[in-house]
Length: 301
Length: 291
Image (tube, rainbow over the protein chains, first blue to last red):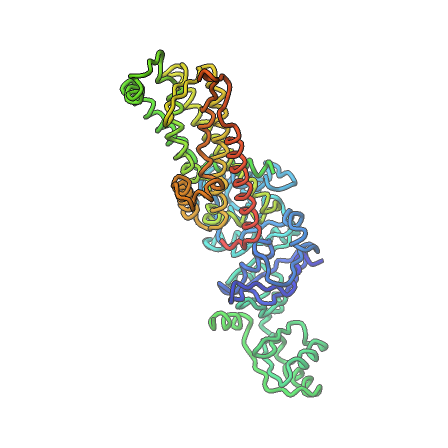
């Protein structure tokens, strides 16, 4: 079952298209990596998932229900941190969790608060005011707020921002624990592929609000496979042929052509298949790894 | 909803800024009380100098009731500014801090949050008024004692028997709560339109000053809109201290000269509160939370 189903959502701020016709699905129990450079539309998308921003068009379903129509019931099962860990400087870590536990319909037990603070490594600073916290500690507390009511879906927007290497490793371990041991669905965004590839089962890369690449992490990062750009006289027909064949898993039509990720040895077969089907192939260009491709996207911006 | 109000109250009273208003009110009242305690007779003589030749007043003119009246006249003009410090920061302060997105991504709707915040700000306002009432009335009664209330209006004097005064203060404070809640709701509306704290606070204060000037100026064009301005009605708590007289020009105990005026003012203020809060809810519901 898809825990998140996004269909053709767009968000315009005046002339600016922050998110453009974005669609994706996240299955239950997955760690879904949402990747893109700063300003690519990640946070806008996450805010739309949480109904903080109204989409200009498209639909969003969480747990099979429209977020617009079932907001309260859906958000009861969601925990999230969005961008910076902004908190109340005059409240302690415990007070924050007590406060956010209180807005849940299901009662959150006091020991759950203690356990959550232990989980994020803040038990020793539980009674300290947030104004004395470092950025990394605030980030940990933000994650604790997202977890305190034991949600099924956890949305973490850049959760490792401001953390030291040990903190980053702890958060990675926590995400893996939440997914593998507790069966949670985790939607985690980052601007660093290296961050995401270590925790996510599935990756989606966006750039300037548009989907660029989507697929299972193992396959996308498989060094045996290549990103191939295909230019034809009729991309629409080519796409239909590729979709009907065994090449179709990672087909991403873009303005510059069609991008595929596939084993290097299948490139001649792909070419042959298109020509046999009557599609005039203008060129097939082999890119390097997904990481190079991502870096290329981000460096072009 | 009660949980949300508790949360908002908790946040209000954990902030040091909240106590500025309580401290400022206490400091002002204590200073004035101290001044009048030390040099009150000279002040009373100054007040009475025009009528001393025609009227002989027995008893204690400068008693707790008169002190409270003087304090209210001075303070109820300025307390709105203190109220604006909190009310105008309720939404925009959270937007500025970045915590608004945390609140609005909880299962409660934005309408719930906005109403809870308004109720919490209103409770703060009422508590500030109760604090003011306690210091201005009860502490003054304790320091200066009680006697009949002697008030000098622009072209007449009012003498209210001491056992006919206390309920008028209750009425005046209830009325003042409507005035201050109007300021709270105005601050709230300003707060819903901004993502920083300073703008709405300054905006609320400016609006009060602007409309007060319009209410005070006696220009025919402004006279048309005056009845609809909240600032025209905010100071009508004084109507509780205008008393009816009988044919012998003797005060009628328990009477108020112009009850319809009080009712009209309460109605205008209530309408403003409803209008400002409704507008705040609509604005927040439509707003994209980008902070």
